Length: 28
Image (cartoon, rainbow, N blue to C red; front, side, top):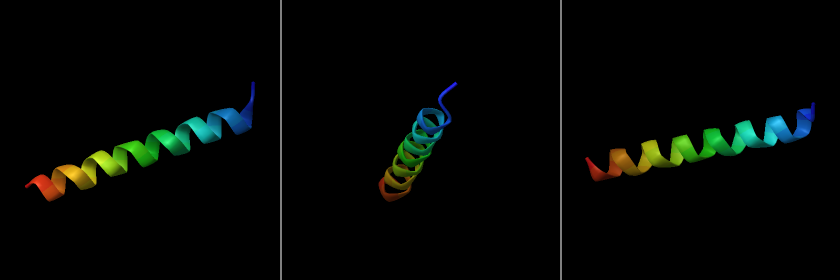
């Protein structure tokens, strides 16, 4: 179990979700 890999994957996923949410808000 690679904690660093899991943390990085989770962090990047969170960044993608925030980016999509921000773009959607701009679209509205």
